[in-house]
Length: 65
Image (cartoon, rainbow, N blue to C red; front, side):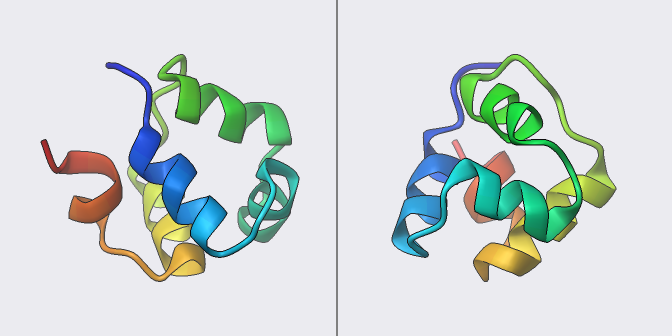
């Protein structure tokens, strides 16, 4: 699992910091940082929550190669 640059760019496009996104989905900023760095594999529930906040599909952020 490499860095998730799609998550980072989707978050930036919404002008959200890691902390903003973390607060919106109920996790710590460190969790968002770890997901973006590829150090943490989020649950499907967390993936869906992140996508809803960012207005993106799961494919666009997590599963598109």
